[in-house]
Image (cartoon, rainbow, N blue to C red; front, side):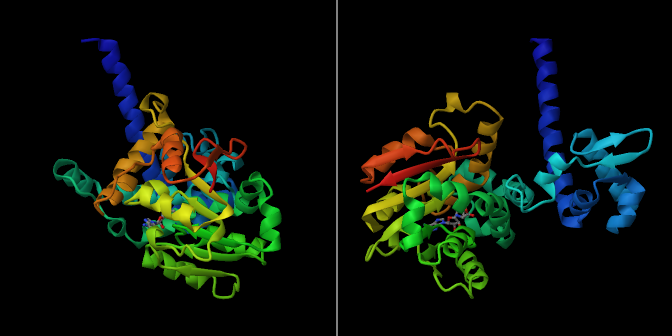
Length: 349
Ligand SMILES: C[S@@+](CC[C@H](N)C(=O)[O-])C[C@H]1O[C@@H](n2cnc3c(N)ncnc32)[C@H](O)[C@@H]1O
């Protein structure tokens, strides 16, 4: 037995455990208003923060202490002052920042709450259905994906596709498939009033939220269709999916239907987790996060519907191969807008 290896793994495990408890503290700070207060006021002693944010002083001191040890906030031992640096506040308290991680603080506790079901499925097969994660999960997806969509979708992502914004300005038919609570479809409709935008999603709860958010926007509508049933006539000039294909029960049927619904000169913009199809290229923290969230949510909810369980780390190599099989003639990775979390691809008929 290599004693040094045991010690090294002990340190690693402490890192896993403290990462999990830090996420728990951040979720409490998010819900209680502590993060919002620190984002606005920057710093204070535990007593000042508790008073200003109207929180219980004992909890406030314990939570701030844990966040200081985790290097989320800085602590000055001479003055007892805790400070949330503005660079960290971008992640925790500003939902207009593309770095805002509030959605993860909704989703990760819900994902962890389904461990029993995933363990049962690991023994017997099957999975934990999307609805089992509860209505708050839909809010979490929107808080997770919405901030970057609000900042980048119409200003960076769509302009990265050749001549697309000119066509959107003239007025084309757009479908956002797996639209969730509608943020992307609404943003496109608002930025391009001549475009006709339809959001499709299998989740009735998501469609209800999307409809309620868009009552006064004339050029967007939402339909509770599964991707295999989206209308192919008169077709769409732009189809988008943001974090959807790997969640589908039948991803190949979904890609084929999107191909059929795309007009001959149309473009399909697909955003998926940025991973390789080969495990050996994903052996880092990002890979651990993608496989983890996949096993505990994305893959299990697909398997719960007797689906393929493609997994969030299906990766760009398999994506290209499946796109070819689904009938797309070109598959282009958009490197200019691909980031460490998400890869973007433009596919043409
Ligand atoms: C991770 S969420 C992404 C939601 C949204 N695109 C966003 O960026 O926030 C995946 C979405 O795919 C939807 N979905 C799953 N299977 C579907 C299917 N067969 N047809 C249409 N939508 C589906 C889910 O209901 C969910 O809203």
